Image (cartoon, rainbow, N blue to C red; front, side, top):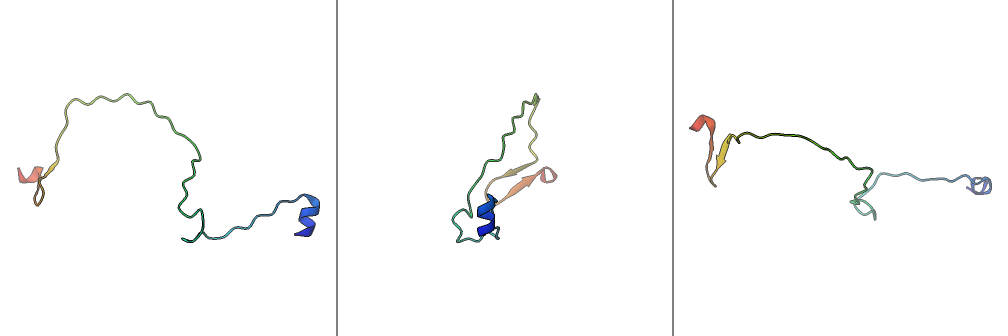
Length: 61
């Protein structure tokens, strides 16, 4: 470590993150993705209907 410091070499220590680590659940933005899409929806199609305790599907029509 003394030699690395003397020569200007930067050292790092890597370890597996644990729940007690300060940055364990930290979100890091590594880039952005912009999408420009042209989409057309002519009519929605219901494949199932959830009315609480019962789910109605196309087969149940």
